[in-house]
Image (cartoon, rainbow, N blue to C red; front, side, top):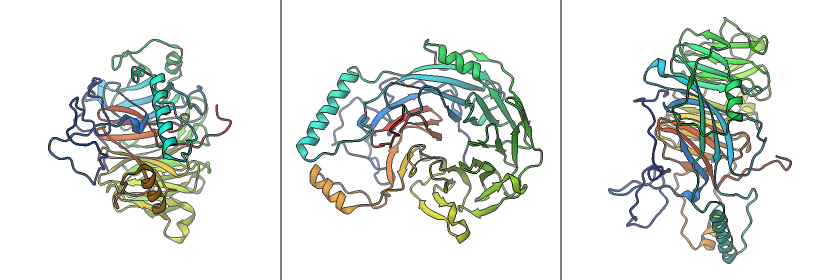
Length: 474
């Protein structure tokens, strides 16, 4: 299990020259060697070599921070459009800090606007020959120049903070009422807050905020509940507004039932079934009374709140701690889990009765998996982060196609030899952040991923992620 941020300290603001990603190091000198793609886990950096970001790999890439590092954050659903496909974007977040003193902590409610990037085609054109490919490349370059001749502009951060005693281990906003937020503290408390006033103030404000120096408000939570120990597992039900489960390091899971819009009843009798810390919880996207849990004991349990306080079923999932999990909202039979040994697995829950439900297992990462999440727009895609400082994006529908590779080589007149130890399902590798802790896809901006790490946040939109969008999306 890997959770804390080591050597906590305020995130340092990086100047424009040093704000390079995909390896983090930058240099103004011209490299003496030809530029090539660096493959983590395959290539080694020689003395004097540096990694530099290739901006063409992203439709958008920005970095920001709100002061102290944040172990957890959540994207707030907004009213700016269900599916947004045009730059610039505006997004809202909530995040909890990991400060060096308990009294320094706060929950940040923030708005990031003017997120710029390259115009993208939702359906890429098919090139028929080399000349057409060259023409399209030229057009693409012209478009980029026309859109932003001075380069990408920095996003505008507006921030409000609410004081919080203790570090925030995990924070989640309610799907149905995103101004309602639940936060797990290292003090053992789970608290629920109403941040509607702060979100409304940010929505109405057009003034640029000052990073990390916003006023701190004192506000009481709607309710707080004390576990016997601290914890990290928490999830709001996507089907039952206000239903919440929270799990702690003493193996206990508690069910919160809403009694009104601002009050909850917490069942004091916990769900028991794990022999070690409960690390993550996920409600079923289709069954309102069913949720899943994963644990340091290496197992995953499926629970039905109608059947008592014991698991409906439980199975060994990994050979080490199961740190995180994600239930596929578009294909509800699929459950992904990530382990402390760096592996992550995909299970088809329909196969549980047959014994072996694993349909995919990956050993690419060599350090603990810290976050995993299915794409909200592509049923076969998911993103994974690891303590190896990599964020990877996967498409499970892909398979190695030797004929396609040969055709691509012929068209580009290049030698493209994918390393044998890189899975064909691996779509993208993002680097440059230190100690990545959590990632989320933006449900309203297809292809956008936000991640938090010890040195701040990244917003990225890889250029090779083409989402299938609803025809009537707006």
